[in-house]
Image 1: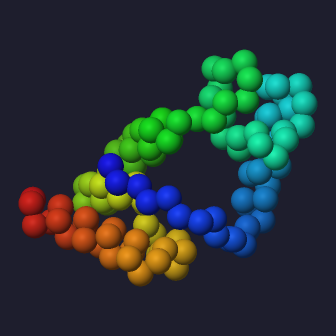
Image 2: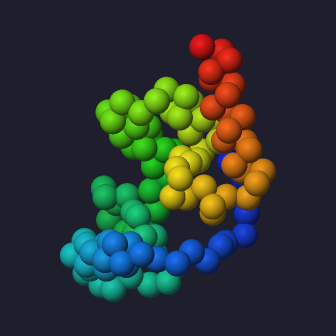
Length: 114
C-alpha cells in the first residue's frame, strides 16, 4: 500500500463534522476522565488505558471491511488498497492532480486486469 505524506491542508468543516468532533471529545472525557489536549489523538485505540492513536493499518482495515460490506465496486476497493485513498465526487477536489490521477490509474489497472 502506497501512502504519500504531505503538508497539512486546511479544510472547511461541515456542521456534521463539527458535531462529530464534539461527540468524540465527549467520548474522550468519558474514557480518559479529562479533556483532550492538542497532542491527543482524535481517534484512539479503545483498548488502551492512555490516549493512543489507532494505527493507520487498523483504520484501513475497518474501511476495507465497510467497503466490502457495502458491496462497493471492486475497482474502488482495489484503488483504496493501492493508494490508501477513497475518492468520491465530494472529496476529489481536495486531492492534487497527481493524487487524483494515481487513483484513476489504480481503477483502470483493476479494470484491465479483470
